[in-house]
Length: 387
Ligand code: SF4
Ligand code: SF4
Image 1 (spheres, rainbow, N blue to C red):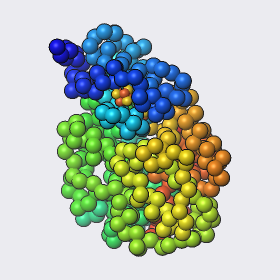
Image 2 (cartoon, rainbow, N blue to C red):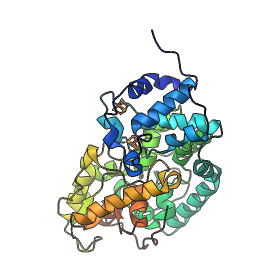
Image 3 (spheres, protein in one colour):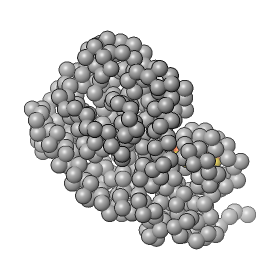
């Protein structure tokens, strides 16, 4: 006998995944950074999927208490990679968030992110305009220019990286660039505001439709365009990932060692961002680029590649569960220092901001590529602050 269909429409397609999780002896339990940080059985992937399943069946009320665990996820995909069924827990929880947001029981922090999205996007657009204003290779709105989606968090919180990204893409493609002003909508997807996300996604797709090329710098934005847009029915032109663009031109990058690099050309440690690694499967490219540019193989963490551990910067965790988010960043920074330090290099705006906010002067792979292609930035990094 088959079990009845789930009543929450967005969870219905995930019934098989939810049922395998509910009856699973928590085989991915150790993988979840949020459950570990809060020492909570409820927040294990098993716990979060079970509550989503019971919500879908109507066994528990769709109230704030039962909604809360769906936002205790950084979208790190670590549980999926340890699962025999490759259950996409983060995707299921994203759809659970949408159902719960629509019922007005999302956590206040998530509702605030949605309410302030327009203001945040306008701020990011102004920031990207200002960053591009001083660069000769930037031609806002030019039809023949390569469109570059830098990412709102780079624009707002790491303008020197955003500037490096624009200059580096122009050098790599050998022509002018035009910064994309729209946000991909990922904060709204994480908040659970599905209608808002779809509107943002369509606006971005419209903005880049006529561009001859589209390069995406932040892997969180890139995965959103590559995976979430088609999953949710938004058509967008194909995009190239910044890391891939740089990797394809690796022979043009000035080989190290280079004493003008961050850290004086000393040791660098690579942190695999969840969105770039497990999200998009890019593990070798950033390592090879760093080895070329610095002249030495980057060190890593004890767990890396598919087993890499999260910075705590994803899935809105810094605002929905700030203590857990800080704890995760502090763990990574402590391990980096305990293993000998050097320059901590990552490749996504969320991880960069998270590490810097916890006192570690982390750098971005973009900065190294820009330096090696002769397109570096004169802007100093902003002072560290809490996300
Ligand atoms: S994601 Fe896989 S391993 Fe984890 S609880 Fe679900 S079925 Fe078990
Ligand atoms: S995707 Fe990451 S944070 Fe989310 S439930 Fe799985 S292991 Fe936990």
